[in-house]
Length: 149
Ligand SMILES: [Zn+2]
Ligand SMILES: [Zn+2]
Image 1 (tube, rainbow, N blue to C red):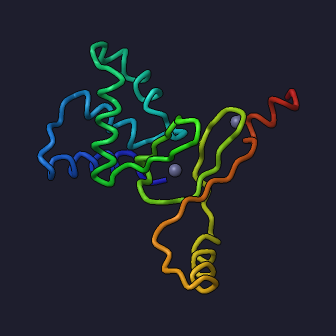
Image 2: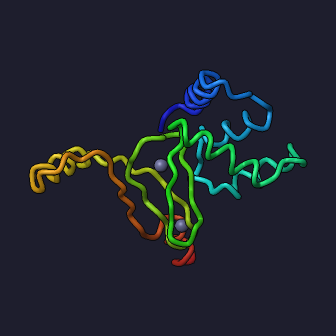
C-alpha cells in the first residue's frame, strides 16, 4: 500500500494545481480516499463524514469523487449492481480481490502480473494499455465465521 499521508498530499497538490478550492469538506473526502480502507463506496465515504459535516449531502461526496477521478487521482471500480467502489490509495489499474459475503475489497500483490501482461501481448499482438482484473471469493474472516470459530 502507498503511504496514506503521501497520497493525501499528492491529491491535495493536484487539486491546487487545477485551481480547485480546498474546503474542509473536500479535504476530509480526500483524507478518506487517500487511505481507501476496504475500497469504500460513495455512501460509505458519506456516512463516515456526515457526523463532522452535518450539512454535507451525498451529492457533494459524489461530485468531489468525480472531480478527483477526473484528475486521475482515484480509481473507480464499477460493478453491475451499481455499487461503485473507490481506491485513491492506488489510483492506477491493479488486481482486486472481492469477498462475495462481506463485500470487502483488498489489493493482492501479484508478482505474476507483469509476466501475464507480457504473455498477453505476445499471444495476441495487442499493445496492452490497461487492465481490469477482479478475483471473487470468500475472505479469511468470513471463512472463520462460517466455520463458527
Ligand atoms: Zn468477507
Ligand atoms: Zn485497490
